[in-house]
Image (cartoon, rainbow, N blue to C red):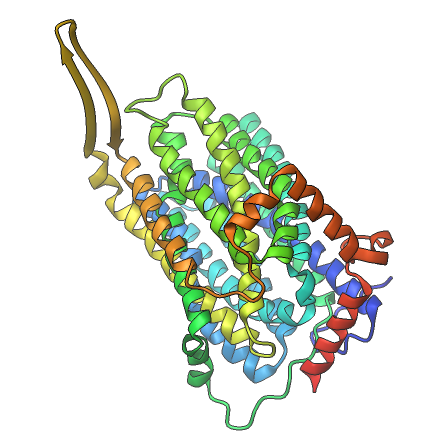
Length: 499
């Protein structure tokens, strides 16, 4: 089937149009994953370090994508004024890919200016991404049927994560063969930009259901305030804001900790990351099925507790120095982190899509993204600013037993440097999970019910439910894995949005 490029909203006329749109959403996700892998994460941190970045700069680089979410406000203005979410997404995404080329060119400049160009390019890329994401979220809210949000985005994430793992491994091999200088990292960023431009073309070909007509006299401030007046959605935003703060107080510095404090090379750091991605892949579909069946909230609760355990576990990687169990412990932590991230990423995004009212998704999801980004952006800035101060601090608790046969001393707790951030993040994450209990999701089950579903009998029942729900659609090509009832519901949703 031929795909045509367009920026005008269109009527999703039937099942074929809907399936075509979902297929393109997956392809765009794959292109975006290649871009994010090569131009972000471990490789971006290593690029910055190779240009002479300090801990404060690393914290700023980690914070910029989140702080730039303030640009979702002009994104809302554009969407509400133009009523063309696809046009806004395509234009902003194109600008973000151009900014990646600026980041790649930073290697050509003298040392102080090169790092400034990297930060400036990342700021522009992040701002464009915020505008594009604002429009894209509302677009997807009206395109993807509600009953299969978890399954569809779970499978999309599965494909993206698998591709990201393969690209990470290939890029790490390239870095090792080249010696790991700044030139090779600049080449990776440029390659990410090229993949991003492919994604822009795929976005332009994806159908967009028309937005409902703008209400007469509608103003921006009341529109932005509405999500905060919605008590349940406000509680969700508070949870995601605190959760983002907790994770980003520690996560951006995992790579720095392994590269600098533990002295590990990219040949070890990247395979550890890939191990987490493989674990992520193994659980994505399961979390998607359980989220559709039992609700997103229990998935967030269970995976959130796994996250807390991982954050606390990082404090034992050195005790107080690297030890024989350091590498095995790192493997376990990355694998469990991959399992937990699969559930939190999927359920955290789909619960926001689910609780946002139809036709108001742009404003609701933009405000949700801004609140979550505020917490996630402040945390690495604080971490970077206080990194040097905590580097010289040490806290130890020793259990001592003295008797006639002598004295036995055992270290029960030993925190130093980055350990303070890891332990602090675990405490804040526990508070975030408390805030989650206040959120109400239609049809939610308890975390205990989800845990029972995770035993073999529960997994078998979940698989049977999946087959039953899919019905005749099981013979169709993925990602068009929705049954006839889901497709009909989607078409009714599109018709309602137009009326």
